[in-house]
Amino acid sequence: PIATATRDAGHRTRLGSLPAGRSKGVALTTTPDGKLWTGDFMGTLCQIDTTQSPPAVLPPISMNSNMALTGDFVAVADGTVFGTAYKKSDGSGMGTQANNLIVKPDIRTGAVTTIGSTGYPHLFGVAFAAGRVFGYTPDGPRHFRTVAVLTRLGRPFGAVRGSGHRGSPPG
Picture 1: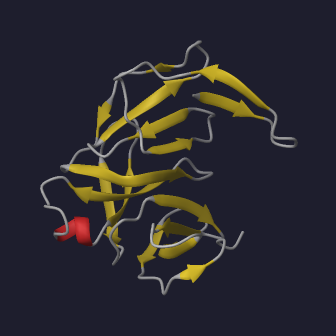
Picture 2 (picture 1 turned 135 degrees about the vertical axis):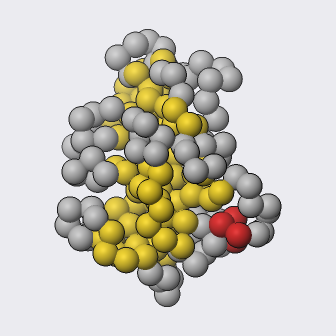
C-alpha cells in the first residue's frame, strides 16, 4: 500500500495500493518537487501519481545503457538522483553484478550517467547524508558502506570503496 505520514507525529494515511502487474518496484524516492518515483530490477522507472485514489503508476521510462537498479535510489535537494545499478547483460556474480555501479539516472528521460564502481555487490539500499551516498548491504543488521563522496551540489567528487560501518550513517 501507498501511504503518507506526517513529519512530526508519523500519523499515517493510506492512499491505496498500486495496480497489480504495473510495477514490481524495489526502489522508491521523492523528488524535491514532491513527486514519488519507483524503479525496478529490470531498468524501469515510473512516477506514482498519489493525487489519484488508488494511486496510479504513470507510463514507464526505461533506463538506457542496458542498466537496471540493484535495489534503490535517492533524490537530493537539487533534484539529482543517485542509485546503485548493474548492467543487465552481466551474469549473476559477474561484472557489475559482483561490483555494483553508482549512477545518476535521469528519471524523466532514462539517461544514465555512471559515476563509478562501488567495489561491492548487493547494494540494496541507498541514502544521502552529510554530502555522501551510502549503500546498504544485506550482510547484517544496520550494515552500510560509503559508496561515493559528493560535493554539496550533488556533483560526484569521486567514487570510493568504503571500509564499512555498523550503525546509522552520519546525519
